[in-house]
Amino acid sequence: MVLKSTYVNTRQAGYLLGFLFSVFSASTLLQLASGQAQQPQTLCSGNVCVAATIYSNDPKTIEFSLLSSTQVGWLGLGVGGDPNSMAGNDLAICWPKNAGDPGAVISQRSAIKNGRPQVTSPTVAFKVQDQKSGLSASSNEFVCTFSRPLNLATSSISETASSINVIFAVGLEKVVPDAGGDPQKASFRKHAVTGKGALTIVRKQGSSGSDTTPITPPTGGNGGESGPSYSKDQILAKQEEYNTLLRIHGVMMALAFLLILPLGAFLARFFGHMYHVFRWHRPLQVLGFLTAIIAFICIVVGFTKSPSPKAHFTSSRHAMFGLIIICALVLQVCIGVFIFHTFDPNRDPKKIHVPTWMHRLMGYAALICGLVQVHFGMDAYGAWPGGKEIIWIVYYVWVAVLGTVFLGGSAVKLLMHRKDNKSGRGDGYNIGSDLKHEYHEDHLELQQRRRRSDSL
Image 1 (cartoon, rainbow, N blue to C red):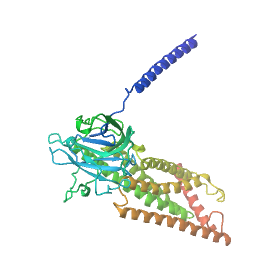
Image 2 (image 1 turned 90 degrees about the vertical axis):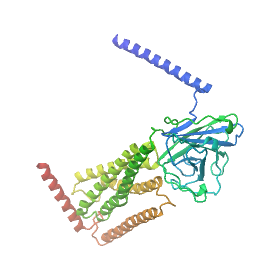
Image 3 (image 1 turned 90 degrees about the horizontal axis):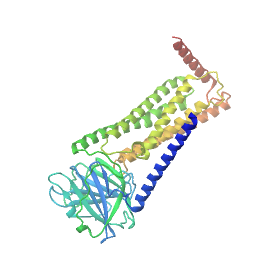
Image 4 (image 1 turned 180 degrees about the vertical axis):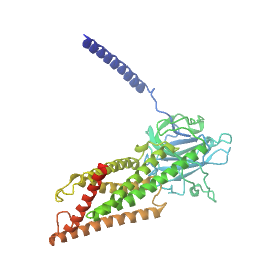
């Protein structure tokens, strides 16, 4: 009876949940069908909001508005390229005139990957709407509204589009104007805050001049990356913390994957027949592993310090690939520890030892991925071609050196092995019998030491 009663109650609860789910689904569909479930008309992140409008009197022109509720040096908006970076985007850089003066100054730029924005044309296809732009003398609130044709060679927008992917950025330092007053020749420093997302295109009747509706002040995010609002001093402090952790992360990862780990791997690759070399291989690889782990922790903490909200390990291919490599390194270390503690000096060297081959192949794969990952990091964080060429030259030369040493050393090792086989000294382990004897003696000594320590 108890089981039957429980079954009946469970079935009734299931019916009730099914009914409630049906009501919820029906109401949601009704809202969508009636147009009541609408997308936000502005895209906000922290202190900045962006809006896009097309007016019926000028359907081939789109108007963008950017608003910052705190004092800024400049605002930037990118359209038409990579939704996650500056690559391929048509960039509008807008900065205020004097406080209290209407209007703003705008420049049109483009960028390769995440590099410094460059001028591609002496003329600007963007037109500032002075009556809707300006810097407030009392609140330091800055609004930049500009229009541009939908059909531009640099970034075309469909006339029927309901939304577009955009990126936007905030620079805190003032723009350095050109002596001749040309905005295309003005210079500016790197942004402190960034954002991205799908921006809804609002369609309104009439013309831009007749629309006096202000852009919504930032009150949090909607539809894109969002975050809390900060004062200028808070943003600067957070950005400095983030930049410091980012530099530490980059330097330590470069040391780990470009120097420490390759050196340890080469010792095992070319001098593995001499056991005393493993006394250097192990500490080097552990040092490289710990260096990578510390660098990984630095960037995780950096994500929490950044004034720009980030999606952590899904924010870029560099972040996702880095997480995979760290997991692979942990597994690689575990396999190495297993081999160290289960080594049998009496095993037949001609037989394939699966853990050893796994450790070897995973090590090579991790090193190659690490070299690629350093490249991704340089791409993502500003060591770009056309900006800091010397960094790229050093990187490519060093990678070429590592590749040459590995391939050349492997070829020499193969030739020596064949020579040993022809002379009758080969034993199936790529080493001569004298070296094999020394190799086994070292391992026996190691095991005896370990047994003595276990008995204490």
